[in-house]
Amino acid sequence: MKKVTTLGQFIIERQADFQYAKGELSRLLRDIGIAAKIVNREVNKAGLVDILGEHGTVNSHGEKVKKLDVYANEQFISALGAGGETCAIASEENDELVPVTTDVSRNAKYLVCVDPLDGSSNIDVNVSIGTIFSIYRRANLDGALSEKDFLQNGTAQVASGYIIYGSSTMLVYTTGKGVNGFTLDPSIGEFCLSHPDMKCPGTGKIYSINEGNYVHFPEGVKQYIKYCQEEDESTKRPYSSRYIGSLVADFHRNLLKGGIFIYPSTAKSPKGKLRLLYECNPLAFIIEQAGGKASDGKKRILDIVPTALHQRTPLFIGSVEMVTKAEELMRAYSEQTV
Ligand code: AHG
Ligand code: MN
Ligand code: MN
Image 1: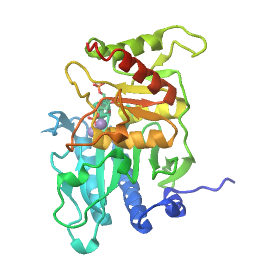
Image 2 (image 1 turned 180 degrees about the vertical axis):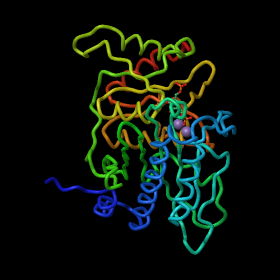
Image 3 (image 1 turned 90 degrees about the horizontal axis):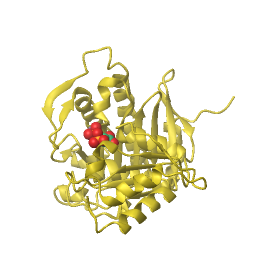
């Protein structure tokens, strides 16, 4: 029989990879795994209990919040608070940063950015949703914690990952030494290593973009879509169009099969829709670790210097060849906007 490696065992085995205090980051990753299992339980029974529907509140982006968004946010904040390694969290669901470990004696060194429930418009319709997280070290341990502590480049991430609540539940993460995926075995309640050393194919046959916004896209994106739809045997075009509307799910599929996901700037949203700190940076770290590429259409996502917690950025992410081609067309048509 094949040996099963649980997430907990794997984290301990790989502790030597960590640059900093080993036990602390291990405990933090373990806490995320625990919160993920709790959220997964609720996601799975969402159709059974009265947890569906809108919660009635509005988040920092003016979007209506579903009950599961609130629930997932509370679970991650409480698990990370109880763990004691995280001093504060920046969450999509909170306008301001949330201090979690106030006991100074704990000397919590980590900052966590989280999109607790990604793809929330898919909750009610039984389509895959996810959680995205990113972990930084607090650069300055003295003085009061402020938003500035979170404004670090994506290259400073010590770990990032996502959980996909899909036909099975998976947790995928990196600490900068490759990407590993774990599938939740419900019979033992453990994430088990199922996708060791994940690699994104250099090219693929899938493009993922909300084409309903086509008229508002920059000319470079329109040209890239045209390129995807053209016939060419050597590059196996036309490509297939696949768009779930849950970033985590679209990203996960393209990571495994090869492909490109694009959420560009539009005439209406010049910075796009997705958030740098808790959507784009964590996935950019993962895709690079898997041999892929992440760009804002011009430059590397991980090199963007953040100026605000909820900052948005256009995103082009996936197989190297496809992202490079899209960038090429973005450059070629940069004079023409819409
Ligand atoms: P969230 O549910 O966390 O607000 O994120 C939704 C995001 C992302 O998951 C998805 O890729 C994108 O919104 C879809 O947006 P459109 O409906 O505009 O295509
Ligand atoms: Mn999201
Ligand atoms: Mn969300």
